[in-house]
Image (cartoon, rainbow, N blue to C red):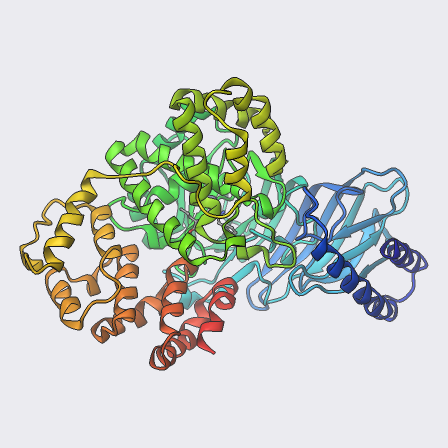
Length: 636
Ligand code: BES
Ligand code: ZN
């Protein structure tokens, strides 16, 4: 109640055209009191299903339905500056306030037509940013916000020419998931509310802009680029990159954008993308987005991949030369169905995006590369999951995770991914693969272009699989999967004959029966090597590490995943021979999943920490803000 009064007060003040600063200060003090009380209350009450605790905006009252951007990319000042015109739909008839999420944005004016509209900034929340309150006059359904971003925007990375492959031109990319779109566009930054968008992006003439929208590979490079995304998407899928990019086609609907020196290698590595698209469509329904292209980013991209619609953003660290890491492409492609077409309504429901996508990834790998590959990928996934279950607190092992009061980026563990996928694999096992595929096809169609909660998914299960297969499925067990920590007993397991060979090699070597040089590794593939290194004992002597290194050259290994596993052993066993390589690794790769465990392991000893600090201080200028904030704690 108090909150409502406050909000109306703000509107009144804004409507009265009072000077923004004076009043926002008073409001700040009062609303921080209210916020405290609210917080204490919510800690005791139950979670409100479908409420997005990571947005302060009000789409339930007045919804933004379309965003129209006109932005100039200023590499010198490291800002995006221009306007966002928002089309509004009033959900509650008499509502006059529009609340947008922003973070570190500078707003210069808000207008409707050519008239100024009152606006003010509300209290800043450390995780959620600073809400922007706009009073919308009656009968107005479009407002335009003139603004610019901060050089430190959490969702934008500005790279100097030196940080690119070509070294000639600067580079820019955005990463909006989970709640960073608000750092470059004032909008309702919640996956609950979907928007269509269009954009005009103005860049230096020699550069190309691409977006998560229709991209024309043959566009004239004149520094003014226009985009249109006609399907409604959640805000975290709005994405932009600008750089000295070239395009190469890989198939009828697929192609790759990259800096020139990566282009041919990337197109060869990912040449199966078109087939992945075709095979996925066969089972799960038509691809809804037109083209599917990949954008290869500089190595500071903080993730493996990001499923920006029509244009997945991809780390170059997966270009291994042997297609060994292309599950990442299958994953980002699969999001075109699970994630982009059906979207998690809030970040608590992230497992609906990532669990379904991880399940589909395994299936796509089998469609394209066969059952042996499928089994190996499953075992490696199961091991990652087991490691997280052993380490994470119980509350973080729950699929429908409670994120109230936490940073949305905290959900990044194997739980939504691998536990989510394992749950779906159990459903598949129980009702049969064809039936489960049919279910998925229906599910994708049923909720197409909607954002849904875990509870909506459960209701849908009730109406479909639970009704159709009462003998095979058990509701209580399904709820256990979704709402309880750990893995229910009797969950599906995975095994791979190719890995039995590796297990035997481990045993023979560790017992002293066989020297490393005598292990017959002639036909081993990437996955066997990865499994071999991952499953070496935690504690080894320097002699043992040296023997392996002398025979297999793990320290010089170019595959970034295997190098990562080896470097972890090198840290944990104080194997200093590999530390030059470790330094090189940490200062050239910014993918958080690869560097974070290394920093964490280094931080456990004073010597390791000093080394980590040295590497971090050098690497930092090239790291993405997300990688910096995830790791700075380890070097302090
Ligand atoms: N959508 C995610 C990345 C993400 C998740 C960003 C949550 C921010 C918050 C993307 O699809 C993803 O899962 N990437 C993985 C790859 C994968 C093969 C598991 C990654 O980047 O490691
Ligand atoms: Zn994903």
